[in-house]
Length: 297
Image 1 (cartoon, helix red, strand yellow):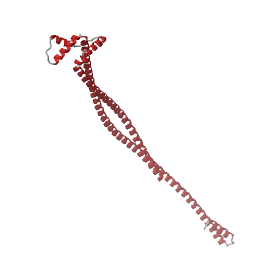
Image 2 (cartoon, rainbow, N blue to C red; image 1 turned 180 degrees about the vertical axis):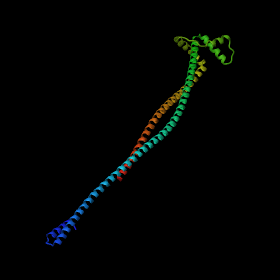
Image 3 (cartoon, rainbow, N blue to C red; image 1 turned 90 degrees about the vertical axis):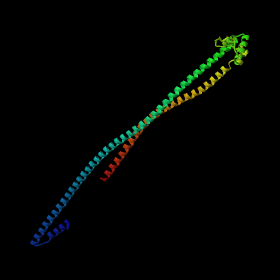
């Protein structure tokens, strides 16, 4: 029975004209009902307070559990961070060791290749110097023979016509195996080397050619000069090839030096990029773990 019903019954009982016993019973019942109502009210109040206390205690426990879980998560995060740093340090060390080994191998290979090129270049330079020396010697020999022939033509042109004819006859006699007289030998010896002035040389050469010097003398010298010219031409081609090889070797060495610098730069950039990727990956894993733990709360 609810409290309003009890109150109605109480009022009704009081309003009825009853005997003293009934009145006493009514009063007793009324007091009992008031006591019951008070006890019920106290019970409800105590229940509400107990519920509030329970809820507060539960909230405190939940908060403590949450704080413990947060502390645990922070500890996990700290351990994960330390693990990431340790793994990153170890990974960096491994990468650095691997890169150092690769760089050392590349540098060693490049160094050996450079040494080979330098040896080839030195050999090419030595060969070039030798060719240049041979070329200079042949050029000098060519100039000597040409000057000797030029001087002979000049002196021949300075001779009288009779002496010129005697000299030609003595030369042909020697070609045919004939024995030469002292005068004939002297005539041939006079066809030697002597410098003349430019104008006198021109006149002498003209007279020599007019008297048939080039038809009789100088065939061997001309052949030698032509051979020297051919040899010089060949040597010049070889010299050009050697110089081209030198240029190519120098270009190769420059490219190798550039390659070595680029490899060092690329290796450093790759190490930095790998470290950044590794760090970002571990950070993402850590954030995902933290989000998952937070969602469980």
